[in-house]
Amino acid sequence: EDKVVQSPLSLVVHEGDTVTLNCSYEVTNFRSLLWYKQEKKAPTFLFMLTSSGIEKKSGRLSSILDKKELFSILNITATQTGDSAIYLCAVLMYSGGGADGLTFGKGTHLIIQP
Amino acid sequence: DVKVTQSSRYLVKRTGEKVFLECVQDMDHENMFWYRQDPGLGLRLIYFSYDVKMKEKGDIPEGYSVSREKKERFSLILESASTNQTSMYLCASSLGRGFGSPLHFGNGTRLTVT
Image 1 (cartoon, rainbow over the protein chains, first blue to last red):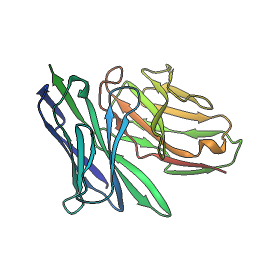
Image 2 (cartoon, rainbow over the protein chains, first blue to last red):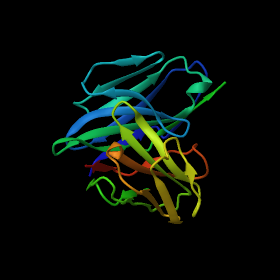
Image 3 (cartoon, rainbow over the protein chains, first blue to last red):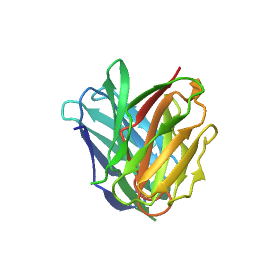
């Protein structure tokens, strides 16, 4: 059975701290790993990672994938209260003739205290 | 462990057909959601429900309706399927009210309308 596990499930830090969120997976026919930020009605897309060892960066957020050890991390530096959200990790898998199947982790609930 | 089950993994329907997508969750969650995922557009909310027999429009409700007759079941209905409704449909549930709790997703239904 395909599995995506995120840790920690919740995290409380102070503004300005750096946080690292973890996502490990066990899936068949891995295609890519996606990170989302859930704070409003629909989770917003952050990163898609397909290749191992290549860091993706957007402002204070960065993410990297390790396909050998089957995990990804999402880093947020100099956190702000607006970073408070649930961060979801999902794995996209191939199935048959094309990309298919999306398995989500349970999310990390991040709270940034002023 | 929360399980969100979508009745079909793949569906192929013809233009004009009425289509039912079923979703069942087993953890007594109040909230249930229907999203569609399209390349480059991320997750978009179609409809959601906070309680039995209640429903709220999401961001893209046109062409869809929903039904929640029982707490555990949330159905998405395409009254007259069109080719632009070809997509991956994801059902989710969460505890409590609103969008502050982690979303638990089903495995998705890939719908093709020909």
